[in-house]
Image (cartoon, rainbow, N blue to C red; front, top):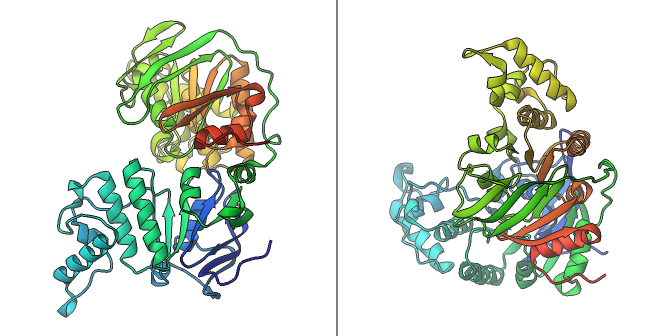
Length: 503
């Protein structure tokens, strides 16, 4: 494939490595004035890393970034902004107590005499930007008084306040209604007409084909292909996204499931998910797959009592169990390993042994006093099974690698001897060796009769570990897939809501 010339912004052979992970491996990307380029790839493909390099948050380890053909370096986010590059993120960082105008110009407000902020000029410029994108918002109103959609428009106005040449949109429609999405499409068309080069990141194929002129596909941190949208179809993009070998880090399993352990009936939440129904059997690994915003984690958190459903029932061994708190979930034999281990899964400033035994103090204490020897013994049992690598069990969890932190969190919940364990993105952000250890242990747990629910955005992991897979899309079950139908193309098709992929 011949590279296009005349790109406003280009990446050539860019690499970025973190401890144990090569996030980008010689990728290329071209953005052109007056055109939208869709950056496509699974979770973990390297899209977010590219955005952070383009906005000065990360610096590449190798390769080059060029603007108008000239090599550039962005040591800070301000340097990227000064070069005319701005980003509109899925999760906007705004301040509720400030006005709309103050949020738009925070950090670069117009100045009057003696360096004071010119509030009149700031308000008028904010009004002009909002009018330019069709946002009927008073610049003087406080942000906290706006709807979610209006806040998103403020975030877009903030990004445009620097008069950017390159606009990055990272999952910009995740929090918008269909009407608001159509308004965003109109805004994108306006930006194209103004000559902006737009990088559009989305998991939704209908959006990509609606507004993108070009595509670039990443897979596992590598460049796979690029071209014009008119020369490609959904089937080809799906194959580029998922075409890889998944066998090398997954243990061979002989599925031998037992009787039904868990049944979920008609589980609903007012805003996050609706009508979830499934069964889980002894010794089974049930995968949950979906794209960003599918509602998988929200459902799991409701299932273990963090949030309350509006209706629905949970049956353990055929008996209805009321679960309105994590304590009730634990009593029912259900435990949850969260996606964000640093904030929700472990106390980083505490030693390993205390993290592992925290939910099991009833087993390691007498008369209200903990017995350290019993704590160490319990922690040693489960951390050894997971092959935890640490200098000692006294070491603080925050000093461990991401993979070993994850092992501590899993050990903590296994020490309760549950019937069902929910693993939410169990190998997110950990190196391939730790991934293999977690996968092997999952297979071992299932073989011993533990029932496992695994939420994962990584198709190889879903295919390599699951006996069955439930695909979620926009808070609903889109499909339940098993056997010969369990293919990458099938999962992506159901998750993205696209038609059947031709062979």
